[in-house]
Structures are given as structure tokens and as C-alpha cells.
Image 1 (cartoon, one colour):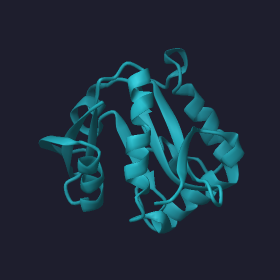
Image 2 (cartoon, rainbow, N blue to C red):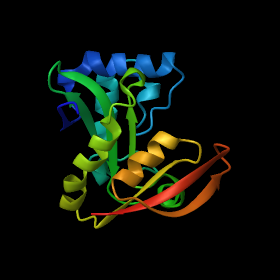
Image 3 (cartoon, one colour):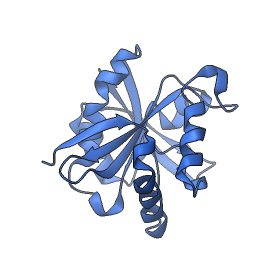
Length: 175
């Protein structure tokens, strides 16, 4: 297993955030757990936007307080994944997306990064008062399902999201 760690979103990784975004876009990959990264070519602008999500007073309308983490591989200091913790639900999160979203850089998949991130973020979730978290994945995303189950996920239900034309599986993880 790789030696990985989580850090809160940081300007120390501006170039790598840009590379991460570009790699995802080039590979037509989702950027779940990255907030609005898809919309921001400039990583500084992305970080400024994400700072707004850290406090209720600065939240964009309709959003919830969340904390964005970067997953860094120690031996080469490379950004390999991103995970976002939403501190509470709005209607959409409660029904579909849940408390946690994550993604792994396309060329770093199938190496245990997602499992590491989901496990490593649990203490933070506890520290903000959560006792369990809802994590969802597409019904055809076998890798994400395995990650969730490996981290104690208990299947609750599947739900169709008409806005995205997707069916999501919902899992609860007790902290």
C-alpha cells in the first residue's frame, strides 16, 4: 500500500490541482468530491471559491458547509485523490449524494487510494459531530461500491436521479 496522507485544500498544490483537473477532463472522468473544480481553469480561483464553503456566512446559495481534502502520496508528493466532507445535508445531498464525495486521479486508480481516503477522513467526520455518514455511488461503479463496503458501508437503497439520468446506491457508514 502506498504511503498516503490527507491535507486540507492548499495553495501549495496549485500546479497539481490544475494537472488533476486536466487529467480528469482529458479522460472524461467524473470529479466527484472536488466541488466546482470542473468550472475553474485557474486553481487559485478554485481555492478561493472553496474557501466560501468553509463557513455558513460565505456559502454560495443552496450549498452546505464542506471541507475539501487533498490526498497526497508521500514518496513523490503527488496529488492522487480528492475527498469532500459535507457537514450536513441539503435536500439534494440527503436524497442523492450524501456526506462524502471522492475521486481518484485516472492514472492512480485501482491502487487503494479511494479506500484510504474514505477511512482517513472518518476522524474528521467525528470531530464535526457526525456519528454516521451517507456515501453514494453510481449503481454501475463497482470500484466505488467495493471502497464503500470495505469501509463499513451498509446498503440502504438505490435511487434514480432524474436530473442526471443516473441510479445511485446509498450506503451508511457508522463512525
